[in-house]
Image (cartoon, rainbow, N blue to C red; front, top):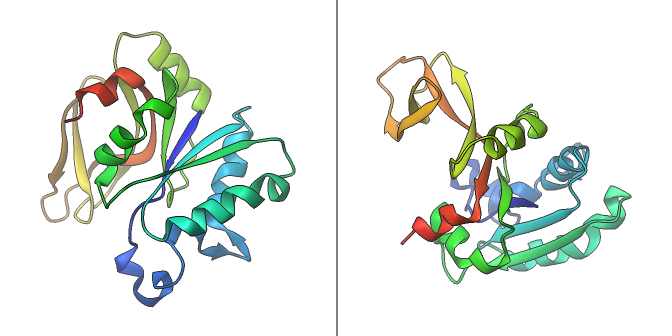
Length: 183
């Protein structure tokens, strides 16, 4: 199951997101979210849950049409947040619709990562989640992910000016038990 975060307002894009949510903005005529889903289906994933808030009705319309656009048999559900609840709130609100293990994607990010490797790492551990990280030379516009060995010890701290650091790559694997820890 691929769970995709689609609830953000996209405020940094200004007028571009006034009428269209950021994941549905076109890239060369194709909604970005469709491009992301096409990449995900390469791994045999055919079940999607879109976590939506802002202009959620557009995601419902998209969900009804994307299978034909992808040219594959996929199931797409939409979970609408009652309000802008953030990542944790969106997951908590959709908790009954999550598989025991699922992938979580940012709906506005495309990162080249092996989902098979992510799944193996999660399956081979007793951890509740596994994140794909990206190292950037200047993390000042992101939240930093501090790690020791292969364990996250702090998530989301502000970067120092010009600090090279690991950041969240927008792709993760989680066990549903993780959501039970969100309050």
